[in-house]
Length: 265
Image (cartoon, rainbow, N blue to C red; front, side):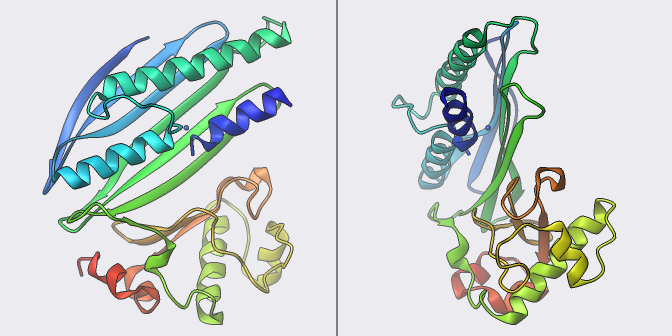
């Protein structure tokens, strides 16, 4: 039970010292890549973040808070000190991994590990999207991973969630979800040409009658709005994280006015 709780905690965090890498700058925002990495016989921890350093202060603060929340939300220091923030979370996770590893008592096992990445992946004059991914291994046959994304409006730092969409409970929109999932499985080597084929790949209680939206919010990318299902959310572990992107021209009727205003066409 203790291991299960720790693993769940690490996965909910949505993920040899600290350092900084190259920075990137766009209208209203500058980021710098900062890292924490520490490896021992019992534990491996790696955290990399594209951290906001300058620009519209409201936006910078909003993204810094987002980073803190995704890493656990328990750091109460100065959010402008990114190295201190990453060191806090890195050392905290490292300590928990070592404790769990030591409780088992078998030092011949591979080390327990946790890696997290928070990256800026889409950037325009109107919006910026960050993705947060994590992977943890706590023994057993395999580890567990998560992958989410969040879009911010640059003018005021507002986070755009599923509320930027409308009419998603229609048959027409659910058809697009099925098309996106079929594309995902085809790209991963599965022959999924019919609804029956798709239903065999999933493990939802309602089958294809009412496919749910992913539990985490969609987000804007260069090519359209992206949707990501987490491991075990609608499909078995072997299916990975089913995801797809609906192009802007197709998803346009399902965006609110605020959502449309974020997109440069």
